[in-house]
Length: 275
Image (cartoon, rainbow, N blue to C red; front, side, top):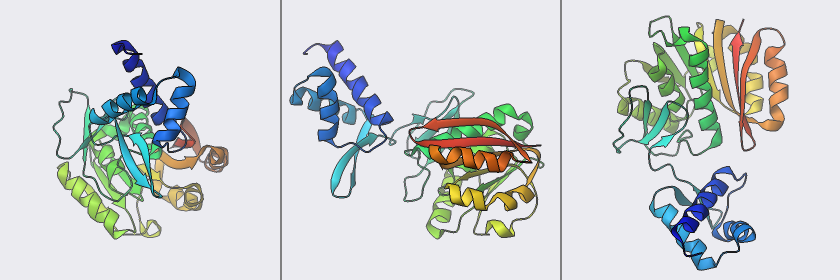
């Protein structure tokens, strides 16, 4: 296995294995998986892995006293057909139809390294494609992002065409990071980040997004029903595959139609439309 083609194949398999794994993988765990398939020498595997890290495709994270390998998000990453997440200091040559979201690294959720963020963004893009009235860029097109984290979903809604977006979060650090990301993307006039609890929000929205866990999405049902307009869209992520059917049954019982379900690893995202 000294040929160039061989190491390219090994690198592709390493990348796909790390990207699709349901659990975090250490160097040793990954080597066992690769060695079972390719019977490769440890040094050869190490060289291929080091190349992927040097190229910015994979990176190491440190949790529970161990080093784990994960897909790197310290470079521009294509999340969907149109949406790219870009570290805020990096230059990105985008095409005319691309949506570039600049994100500053922080502690808040929404950097793109977790499946639920990617699922939510793809769900939002689908919602705008399915319901063209969302992208009308007028004052009647509004969005609410519940539990906004670093603001990435709120930013996506504006860049896809929503007139005004409110992102709410109870966490002060999250709100500060969201405001900074809104500023970086030049959207201060279109996105409002607030600490107002969802129970006190009034009005109706064209699209509501929430990357939250199943118990919260279930609890929010009566409040969301008051906040969502006819023909408007809901985009939910943060749902385990095993929870998906129960949440779908609740929301489609009377007022909503499920327009999309997508899964990545053991997570799901749902897109509903109010009728």
